[in-house]
Image (cartoon, one colour):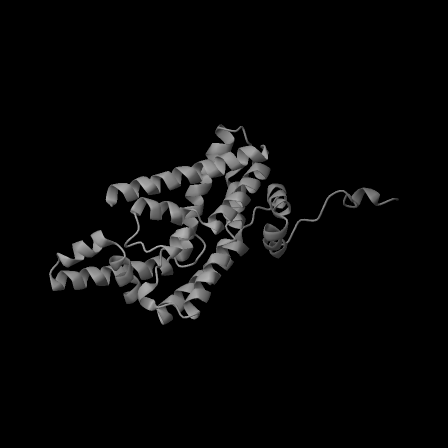
Amino acid sequence: MSDLGTQPSADVAAGLSQWQRVTNTFTAPSKTFEDIKRGPRSWWLPFLLMVILGYVFFFVVNSKIGMQTVTENQIRLDPKAEERMAQLTPEQRETQMKFSVYFTEGVFLGNPAVLLIIVSVGSLVLWGTVNFVFGGKASFGAVFAAWMFASLPSLIKTLLGIIVIYAGTAPETFNIRNFAPTNLGAFLNPAEANKVLYSLATSLDIITLWCCVLMGIGISIVAGIKRSSGYIAVFGWWAIMILGGAIFAAVTS
């Protein structure tokens, strides 16, 4: 009796491994997102890579710059925050500084949870946008996985930040909110530049743009919509965030 009926179809392509998905995100992103669409929608490897490198970055910042210096720099680079600190008593300033240092450390240490929250909220917004506005058929899990893989270029920015620190950047000039020269804002002094201009210059980040392009490709594939619709969904929300940041900078400046 022939056993041909039990053999897998030659037309069915084998799924990619997690490492292949990661590699293809940089070299052939469509293959990664097509694989996510077929399933499984696993995202553990990009998440693990970002968490590990995030902790490495924390170690480097803590050992080479120091959390106290990082916090002092953020206050000094914000004239209004510096003015508020100057109005406090010495005891209040010490308490406020300790709280700020603990908060900064907490954000670093809570990196996995922070990352999951950001990706979850962003994926929910995009899932609703592509399905209800553009008529897509994406599952939330597919959008979530696509977001994780599309975020992989952020590893390059973190590595650049580490390189900048080891290259000998002066601790008193280190800006934790813009630690790598991947946008025009990195070449401006936030304490002297116009707040709206600085917000816009910082938002035009080459790594962020790269991630958005990947997300546009990914969302269009997993949702089964036109590539242009994927770009409109992603860059539309990105533009709204930039505008919101500029308005906030104008109001608080």
